[in-house]
Image 1 (cartoon, rainbow, N blue to C red):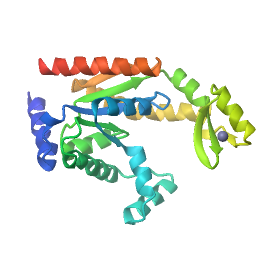
Image 2: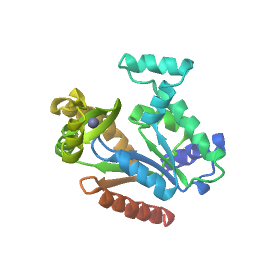
Image 3: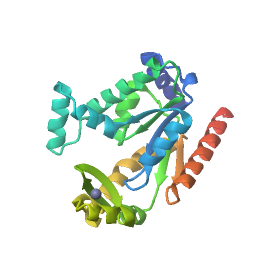
Length: 249
Ligand SMILES: [Zn+2]
């Protein structure tokens, strides 16, 4: 009971702070999944299908990096040193993006967050600042074996100075690149040992998050080892089920 009350109390922080009425935004999604899970592709599909604001922390950080101001300089320094951007900064970016909901004149039905919060520390910070803002946590699940298989097939090509991600299964594209004398690279990061290490870190960071979302009864697990359309179908079905269940609670 205490927990519930606390959640209720937390609940209006974002609503009050940004005057965001959750009734108007029935979908407030966080999407999670290891590298190679196809999470980015699914986030795009979900955003389009449900008309959601897409908060993609990776691309937000890259956008800022390319700007010319104090914050950009600071973030660039941090990233260049190989350090992680402080949680307070990522939270600020998230909050700033969230305000687009209000200014968009009810264009959106909610939002989907990718890349934030990425660990329990960030989630706690978010909860403290904005309360429980997610009502669905989508976890695109694939085995480590599958993730390793998918990522280790990845190649980067610099066609006309533009970075393009290929798979060694894209035989035709690779042939084209070879014809054009493109430089095709197998990044160190995409080799098996490096992937294993990253997956280990990922699981360590994410498991606590998943448990938290499970406890709040908002976790949805999706089988990521299916074709893209099938994964998306499962997502739509399970979101519908979840929303119906919530309504009947
Ligand atoms: Zn190429």
